[in-house]
Length: 86
Image 1 (tube, helix red, strand yellow):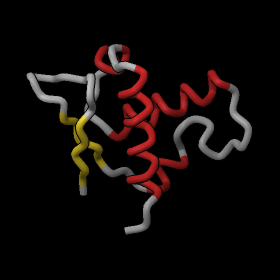
Image 2 (image 1 turned 60 degrees about the horizontal axis):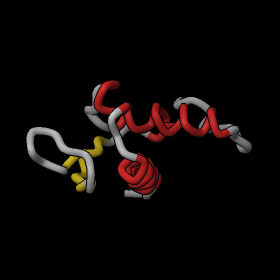
Image 3 (image 1 turned 90 degrees about the vertical axis):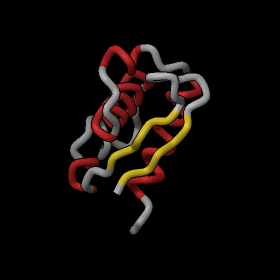
């Protein structure tokens, strides 16, 4: 199951759409720092980056080009999609 979202500033081939792919809850829990309660800003960024790269087909170069609003929307949408019971 996948979910397609629209990011306001991201474009690929003239489209603002990006697909979020499912991963298992087990794979989600293996992402950096997921099981840690208090994260530093650097740890939180690494966690969000790993989550975004695991759940989308973004390349590392495309990730680096994400705007702050797109990054924020993307990690929030992924968390909601992965953690919502089916």
